[in-house]
Length: 332
Image (cartoon, rainbow, N blue to C red; front, top):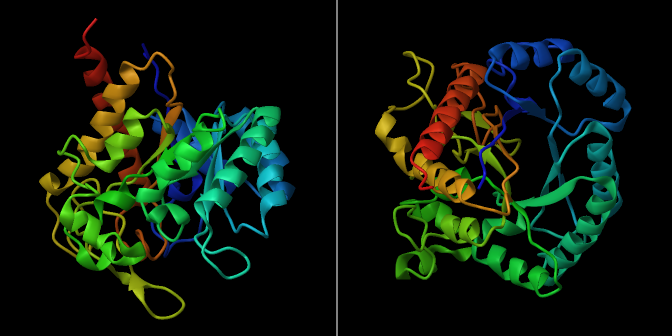
């Protein structure tokens, strides 16, 4: 049974607000180390900065246990292979993979294509010592949550374990949110119960992935059902952010564009508890770690006036407390 669960932070969360100048790399590593609550940092740096990241990691005794990037099939296969090699050299145990919903040819990617690139990436990762984990994420093939188990089935039929990154904020914010459920056409299945988003229902889709042992890596970014859209940030086309980030602790007046209530976070926290309970009893130890991922982009926390880093630290404390509670309540 598992007793260890490293907690890290994505580099994008090492900032206060996006209105401020970004910190230099050494300062970022020092902030994360000095917070005293993180075991590692998550980042796939540009190839030309590999040495800088390696030096900061060694200087501050802070591993780079994970990395990640996004890829278009038909264009970025070589980049994925190179990033897995880079992750292996930096000591990353996983590489978080986002496969864009659209192929480079301008058409939707198929399940078979996703399974095929997963199998190739699995081989590349085995040689590099860095496991590819395919993320559930908006704007990716996996935003249609129904497809994840379908691709998992295709992969497992080839005798290979399917490993994913669980970022359940992308699921939670669609609860009670018909407009968001219309993306990728899941609304009808949600309304009929064929697809269950509610984490308090034992047949919910997040627990399906957890129960099947898919989850190898996780991102912890708070979100709530029908999460408020982010009216403080816009995309290049003028559209406002979709709203996939909610403050983890109560913001001060003027730091957030909506009302805040702690109990709205309960469904998001419930998925974390389910994941931890499963991990605590999982002899296979498939879950390698959890990274906090509060970030500043339009669909997330762009334009927010609260400190993204402070919320990351608060979330990491809660993750550690919840893991300790999970272990304390585990049946021998």
